[in-house]
Amino acid sequence: MLSAISISLIFIIELFSSWTNLYFHPIYYGIALFLTILLFGVGILLASFGYREIRNNFGLLSGKVGFIFGIISVVLILSSAIVEYIFLIYPAPHIFEIRSGVRL
Image (cartoon, rainbow, N blue to C red; front, side, top):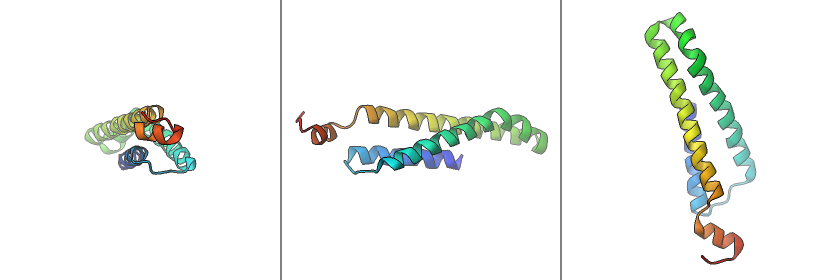
């Protein structure tokens, strides 16, 4: 859950950096994408296996909590990745103006 929140914060920081014309090296996008895929897989594993395994070991309430955390992790990562993808396709107008030299 905390890792999903941290990766969402990374995407939010990158989103604001793209709108404020701050430069990030492409390796940071690669690291963020790798962490997103990794944490997305962890969230799916928590959502699918967490309920049964945690319920067997710690009781029913813990299984439900693990299942809910897994679902929330997947939703947070997917939503932040979709928002980042949209803003990579459609950057801010002033960034287009700086990169292309065309004034909008």
